[in-house]
Length: 255
Image 1 (cartoon, one colour):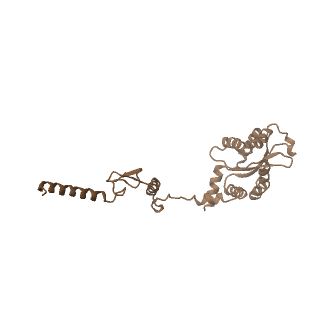
Image 2 (cartoon, one colour; image 1 turned 180 degrees about the vertical axis):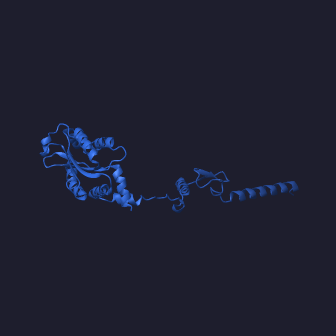
Image 3 (cartoon, one colour; image 1 turned 60 degrees about the vertical axis):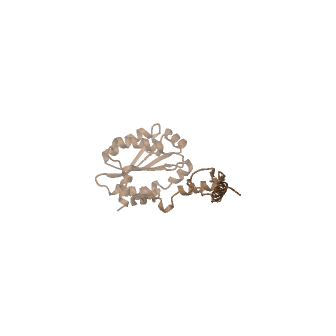
């Protein structure tokens, strides 16, 4: 006959085995419920029975990237501001239309007169324009000469052309007084025509000046061979309009 103490001990052992079996039969918790976020980088999760559980890293990486991105509807849109209507209208004009519009602005001004001025360029400017394929040097030198005479504002434009003989020259339109015109003629000849013969045009001067009786016709004439010179020499922009004149023209277009 078994003793009561042994029966109690065997009962206790069977109870302990049942509890252990019940714990081992429990399902392993998911990474999220086990204390891991889906976005965390972990190589494995240890189950309650000390058995390592492998986790697919690629799926975790995709989840992380997915959680890191916001929906397109949640991203604040950048406020887009269009250019002013006057600038856009000016930009849509062709080079010829810009010259005509700038000439109309000068024609509407009161107090002074419009002058059509043409001058040839010396060999130094010939070489610089052809080598650099740009009129930047010519623009800088012209701006320097004109700014000294018109410190407040200067209304003018010019176009660079090449004659059939291969001589590069400049057609321009200026808005100034008769007194300013005389001084401007002297400075242009001194700066741009140094070393040229005065008989180059069959006249006794290198800078030819005349009143602009037909402003739009003069602008049309000056731009007739503008792009032919641009193609042959490689100059991207063979014309220039002063900044003051350009701003007034933009305002005029916005009316």
